[in-house]
Length: 135
Image (tube, rainbow, N blue to C red; front, side, top):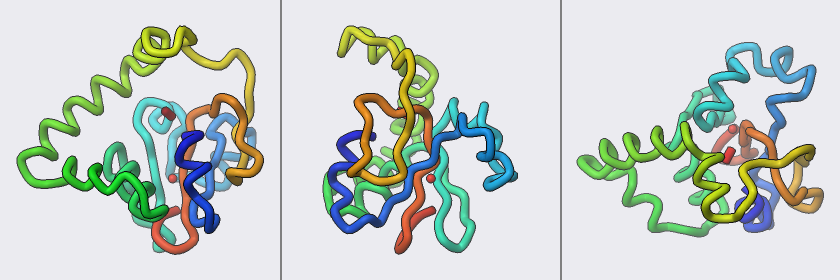
């Protein structure tokens, strides 16, 4: 998330902290527990995206990591989505193995890249032009 925030030079993405008390009032159609299990995104028109569809659109919106589009190709998509579900379910274990830190003890999520913390909480990323949606 931190890399994505830093890549968003035009402010196209908006990040939401699903743990905020007013989250369900603002996004009644998104269950925080489900959003914590799989990345959620919402386009401006209200279309809800999940998992790698969110990841691909977010990176495409900021003009980086174009290779991620390959993960949405037919055939590859099925395998990539399966792998993503495994990763999402065990993301804290993967994080601990790769970084030595399973998750943040206490941190908050900014709404802009300029306010980026050292470790974001699960989010909904939104974009002004392409998308409205944790690791």
